[in-house]
Image (cartoon, rainbow, N blue to C red; front, side, top):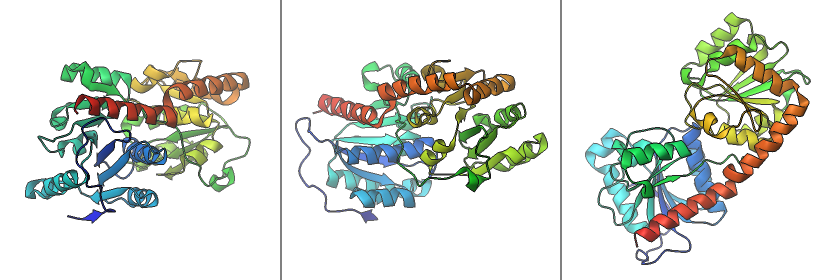
Length: 367
């Protein structure tokens, strides 16, 4: 077993709901990506606000490990692969840590991690969903949480247990970054600037954005993200004649710095259960334009806290981007209403309190 941890609290499992619950997190996602980044953000936020005591079993990603070391959060390394499952190594590490740490609740993030949750635990297990997934990989979880209200509806339908299903939103609160300038990306100071924070994948609708940009003379775009279709979209920008106004940045961690540069944040996805960039744009006071994928349809009110267009609607996307980038009265209104939605549902304080309340409710039911 590979352990990187301080000495654990050896007290027995509590017989009443603790004021500061002990949570063991299992995180098995990729190093980058929306759901993966949020699991890290949530763990950091709950530590920083002193809400829970935590231990994490995760993959060996430098930015995870550094964040835990900076905060004194204990952790174990697990690859969450077939070999570790087949040889029993994963089970030995997980069960040994559970026996030593004695958590009040095990929280598994997404399907792969949930598939490694041991059976017959003495404490409850909560599986978190970032999309409309089946429950097969969550068979040892008794409780389920989705990042949107509609995912919770989906989980109720799949499980038949409404009292065991919760909504746990992601938060849009971003940490301060080192500032960047338009000059670094060769962007004119007065040009309307669109920002996309997304994987380079067909379901994200990047091709719709590039085609819309043809109709937006003088607009520039920063596309921050990596993925399997990056080269395809770089070629497409050349073929459409917009490459001189598009900057492909690759994966970036400085979301706040990029949002501070932008005039408009865009989410043109064909498929998007939520899209944390929605909440991040509201936090950063940047007008949002989104296609009507599931997340945006649930939470964005057109002409109030954001602008919506149909999926794959190039003309509609171009129209709404132009409005958001040039109509100053509209921009002011969108920013004001976006801040209100953020404060009500997606601030770090609101979301972390929701996590704490959910943890305590589940723990109370199982003491």
